[in-house]
Length: 341
Image (cartoon, rainbow, N blue to C red; front, top):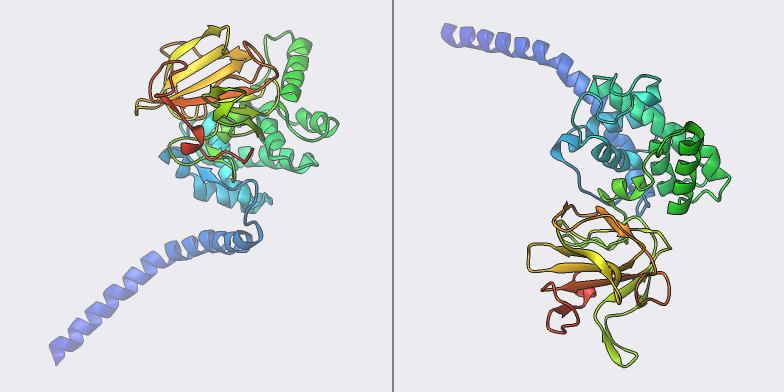
C-alpha cells in the first residue's frame, strides 16, 4: 500500500511537470490556429467556386509557408481565399528559397534583397498585395497579380483602362515606364501567366498531366479536330486575343521551333511520354530547339502567321513529331478539357 501511494505521488508529480512545461506551447498553438480554422471555415462555404481557388502546384518549400501566409492575411484583412494566389506569387518570385521568399524588400522601401527574414518578407509581401487588391476596383485577379510585379502605380492605370488585365495593357504600361527611365524594359509583361501556371483556376482545362495552352486567359474554340472544308483538320483552333501568351501544356523538350509556310511560326514539344504538342500560327516564338520547358511556361504568343485567316492558335496533339499524318494525330480533347465550341 505504501509503495502504491508513493508510485501515485511520483506519477502525479511527473504529470504536473509535463503539463506545466507544455501548457504554454499548447496555448500558443491554440491562439495561432483556432482563428485560422474558424475564418477558413466561414469562407469555405461563402467562397465556393471563387475565381481565386483552384489546383495549386507549388514546391514543398513554398507550401511550408502556408500557415504564415494565412496568419498574415487574417491579421491584415486580406481575404483568406487569396492564400493560394500569394503562394503562387511566392513560387514565381523565389520558389520559397532565400531570406526574402516574396521578394518584398522594395515594396517595404528597402534595397532589393535587403530583407533576410522569411517571416518579414511574407509580412511585407502580404501588405503589398493588400494595397494592390484594395486599390483595383474591378478585383480582376489578373490585374491584381500583375500589380504585385508592377507596383502601386499600376492601380490607377488599370482602373482608368477598364480594370481588366490584358497583355496589351501590360506591354503599354511596361513600355511607358521603361521609356520614362531610359531602361530596356520594366517589369514582367508575362507575369500573370507565369504566376497562374501554379494556380489553375476552375474551368481552366487542367486535367492533371496536361493543361490548356491558355491557363490564365479566357478563350473560345473556333474549329474542332476532324473533317473540315473537304480536308482533315489535325488540330483544334483556339482564340484568346492577338498576342495572348501561349503556354506549354506539360513539361518537355522543344524539338521544333521554326517558320513554316503553312503553320507560320510553329513550336513542337516532346513530352517524353509518347505525346507531342504543337502550337502553330504564333506571332512570336519564345523557345528554341533543345530547350527544356516546364508545364505552363510561355513558349510564344497567339498570332496570324502562315496559312491563317485570322489570329488564333492551331493546337495539335500527336504521338510522333510528323506532319499531315493521320496515324499520329490525336484529338486534343482526349487529353485536355476544352470549352465547347
